[in-house]
Image 1 (tube, rainbow, N blue to C red):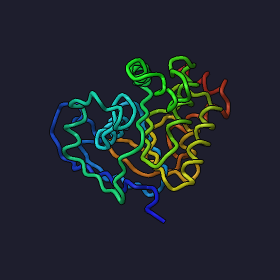
Image 2: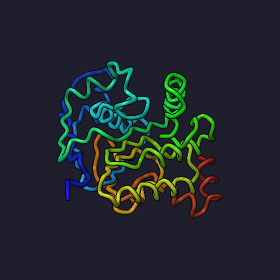
Image 3: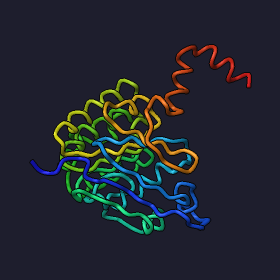
Length: 247
């Protein structure tokens, strides 16, 4: 049996930088960190602006993936990225360097879909076979996300998902977890997922890394601010909103 996931073992960033320019000015970069990956699925959570998307973007660049989404084959218009200054101080340790996989970035999904349409016009509609047989733009936002996941998360590689819940209903989020579970069982895939969704955070066996106060540490999904807020809300929605709106 060959080496199984997780293939990426650690990311280390030396702290102590004094830059006032993004991305080296975010607290996570200034303080430094060592992030260990001990399971095939790792969840990264934190408030807006905490640096979680910056971290996964830096990893995507390190892997050679397109920052608008995709893999090495989509990175045909690669240029200097915003996270390059951060990468100079980052070290990556692999048990097996994986060159395949996919970067899904909800923020630029529309741009990625348009790129696929452009390639189809240049090379023929056969390119759509890798995305469910037709343009992602011919589906609803949520259906396009699920078609992408169902057709691209299916082989050996490292998969970086940045807020995959953005267009997914709770039911679809559960369906995504089902897809992840099927490929995880093969031992051929490592997932690193940035999310605000307590549903995704609860994936069985995943290690949850919480970015907070300029640091990153492992926690239980029930201890995250995301889960605790939603738990308080669903315990008594009317009372929660009444108290919240009065403050």
